[in-house]
Length: 294
Image 1 (cartoon, rainbow, N blue to C red):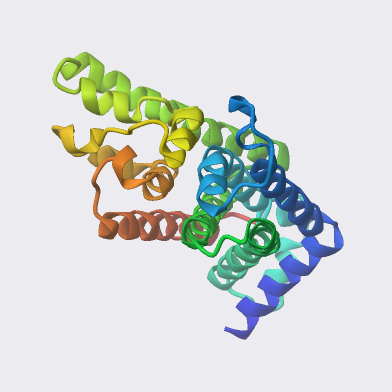
Image 2: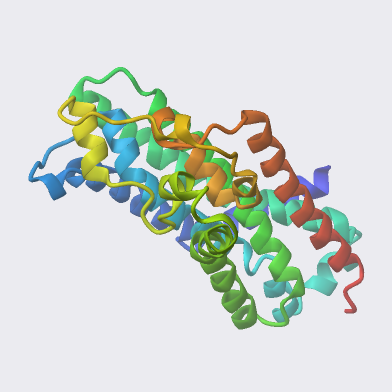
């Protein structure tokens, strides 16, 4: 265990010295603050929003940026050591390949977690002071689920790093994986639904059909003001979208949408989906690293 923590903290220190962590902190802090300030600009309102409105404005940004952050953190964890010819030296020091993989994974998770936690903490505190809003539960839920989403994609990035032959190849692979998770998966799944049972599934498709923009933010914010009635479309859903749990981005999206705007899916399935993705990614990464010919 000592070797795992040494590798993890070394990885985190290297990222901190390179400025990666500090840059992510400032970028994430700016994203949350500016979103809270300009989240209702599409309906002609500028000003700091409360936690619930900020959460709805942030939802689409988080589901794009956090997976990309996790993949970028994880994409060179192993392949960088191979290119720099330091992997043999690390293994020659007595560190097993499995411990190396676990240490790198923990270091990547720390690199993802620190900017997200500090960004949400600082920005959330400023929003609470500015708006005097004490109902911080939606933002806390977004922060926790976003953190888990980042760790999942950091593990996926580590997996791709073990298979890549160079950092450039790893970068191309993680960008393709990001595009599939954020855009292509939903489009393909909905295409299958339309081609097989489009008429029966029309209401469900309308509920989750926009992979790039889940719901109209203007309508959602107007509903929060009490100006627009929002119908509970999920109650009219005729089927449960089990395929949503195959994609971590969809799991994140469903968990953070209000109950009347999402599909009813059990929390236990979300927990199992997250554990499965992390376990599968780390398991395959360990399998690949053990069989890697150095």
